[in-house]
Length: 429
Image (cartoon, rainbow, N blue to C red):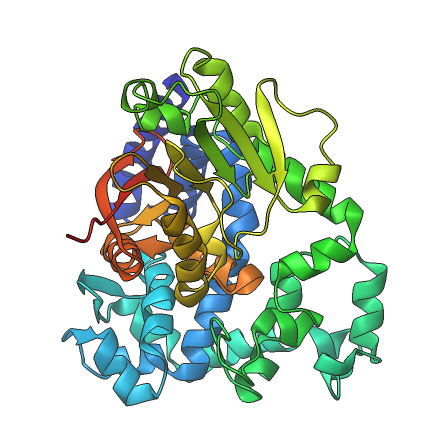
């Protein structure tokens, strides 16, 4: 904290010098702002910011191609809604909402209301001919600089130089690989965020030949292991656990004591770190704790957490564990469209006892306005990797209601972006 306060004190002096017109003061002020940011960030926040910067570039390039900023600037400061932008540009309204979350967070225009935007100085500067030229020059041309040709048919396997480059650079980031095909994709089949309908193609499939990242992981055991390790460790240091955010010790204390009663079902829980921590923290709550996962993931677990059972399961199939006290989904539904998420949830609802069972969804819950940049970027990443999305409060409410669930409460963490949605099966009388 002392480092932050020191940086702030220096910034006040630099801001005064810049206001007075002192030479080089403006550059020193910007440098001081960057110093303050680094002082305030944790190492995780710094590395995450760097990792996610490409999402901003992708959103800007889409906005340029679809002329979203042009349409906003044409209002000359007057507000325009996402629905109006959709009508004017022919762009899907939900895509506009997702792109604009990022663009308003980085200052390219203003969010002035629910799904409503207005131009600022940055908007007008960004649509100048030179700015558009710079954007296309920087984003569209790396392939040409490297002497790479366009693939004739990326869905039937690449035979061009780009495929060779990617094959010899296995570490090449997935967002860069998909983003590198974005312009061709927009001008070819066009953007389909979810590809739920026949004939629709995701950007991931267009660029890499499989519908989502999970298809590639199944083909590459080393990358699958890296992914599972990442998911198992992806939690802020000293951040509250999901069973602290949601008061599990008191809420689940009434679990049945029958020998075969199930306390917690962790659906698609990866290596089992979440259910394992829950069991370790709450050893006296009766009932079975079960990790459900695909066989490939279960085979890679060296040792199951103590007190946790493993069960092979595909969450699109009927849930075999009926009337559990709690069903748990962490970072699962953001990988899927509303249509596919509804199928996953329907299998849980079928198994729930409306008077006893609880569904717990540990995931991002975005506000309907003024979303944090990291959450907005994560939403774009979900589109790129899985054709999924991060949902707002209203989107979660609509999804749950569509499958017969009622949200009882949304429990939010004091630190980090994590929330736990508590839902019950609606009883039909």
